[in-house]
Length: 329
Image (tube, rainbow, N blue to C red; front, side, top):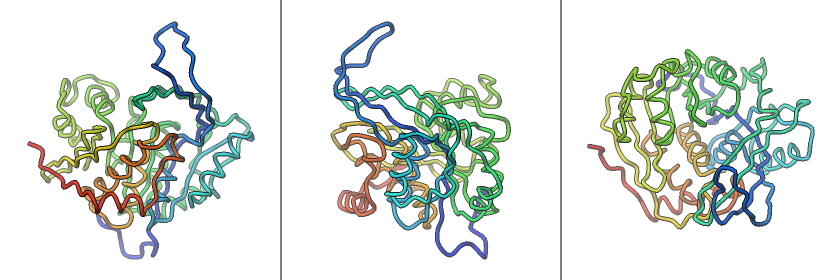
């Protein structure tokens, strides 16, 4: 379901993020360990994270849209840290469930060049539900944003709870074979190059080669994905992002040149800001430009939610160093 918002929309732009909340255990390492190898790292940091929670924080800090987070945490100190971080960012947390399962944990190593390696123990994230109150909040939003760190059946139920005209933005990360019916609900698909290739080679229930199999060029990947969704954003890290929609010339939104410190959560920052920009009326190319500026700022700081920039910071970079979109051949 896509298109213009219908008459009688809520007066305030609203984003609902359905997704994961994790306690991030982060350790700097001289290099990432190989199979069977033990290496010594630096001091351990405990940060608020999880793709869903990160994206909710990014949406709220982007400004202009009320942001609700739908997720589950345990009854432990990790849950306290996560709830506090969300609330401090201005995220509505009244639909954050407490369950009798430990809060999700992400174990993250970060190398000197800012690249990370992550292992996630989902924990309470498996207990997210789309019940009556959650469905009502989704039905009142302009943009629904979700990822794949919670059960896909929950994501599908959330997508089907939105009203006509509301956009469903799916960040198909981490890579997974999608449940039947999920792609058909997507209005905007956001993936990195690796995730795009996995979807192209294994979409439609995992049947390899159903469309575009073997495509390597990001533009070709985006074109292949457009056979199943109305719009695609393929993020390319330091190279920017390709924005493609049916019936329109695909464009490259260039990245801002920065010195990376920690790439953890940069993609989540991109997605959250993109959702907020769409909710406040930006078209997809403009929204991706603002999201790209936010992602660039995020990699210059350590952590996930702690690295998410404010609206004013993003606007300052976006306006002082504009990066016009370029047609993709």
